[in-house]
Image 1: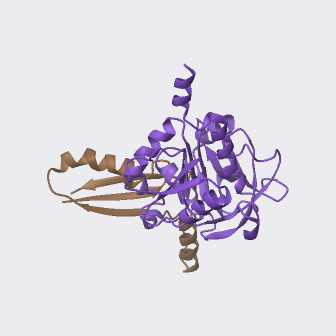
Image 2: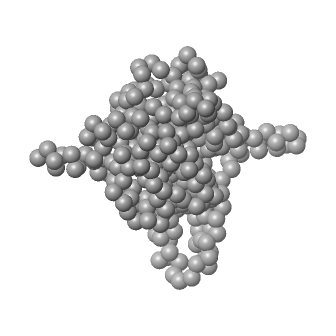
Image 3: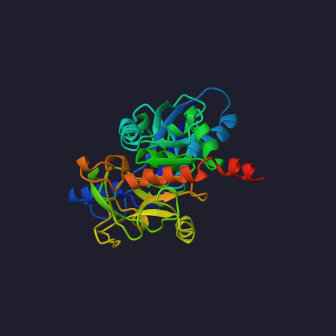
Length: 78
Length: 244
């Protein structure tokens, strides 16, 4: 069982990495790239009950894995 | 006055801080390993620059869980003087001792250069020795120094006069060109609500001797010293108890 966590920069936070990647995609010749957001992906291998893990992973995301001032997160446990 | 200079795995400005505090200012300065659970009776805490825990996950994010940080939080809550420099600023933000966060420089470049700092208020232990209107010249060295906070937090910082340092021109004007990292409001340093915790990206310890090209940074440490000597450095709770 794994918790799969995706962390992305908040919309209000400037994302210079995303802008640079977007420029590179356009340089490759791709038209129609509206925006790129560079974030993080984490996999945490777990054992035990998925539902019991859910609030713990949420707390870990809030306190350590992401910074709520600048980032949003969502996760699945499967 | 006794300073505790924290050491995390990856701290690399700790020796500079101890050198300035002891050899330049003539105070006692001791290293404090991050696994310690007490600050050992120090009068002030310095969270130095570097790359604590290799900057893994986010800069400063892992250090907040070091045992010593619980002691630092308790010390700060009690009114004790705490200054975080560069990575130390990032750690204090991640620990919740200061609002906001430091994100990747807008240019994506690591910037290592001298900057000029406007000091909007001398009403803090860290800026009280700066002559009114003086623009400081202090070096920066960081890749993640772009200060971000939401609008409400920024408005509160301004309303409470808690912005201590802003990137500026030599004449003290706040311009985009003078802003090396894209910080909102050109913020280079702030303090907490109690005005006893300061975080700043520039390195005052690298500008405390003329042989190193200037000693403007020394004013920051001298301010802490004067504040302590004035009897305010013992912690607000202790001071209140003494008065009662």
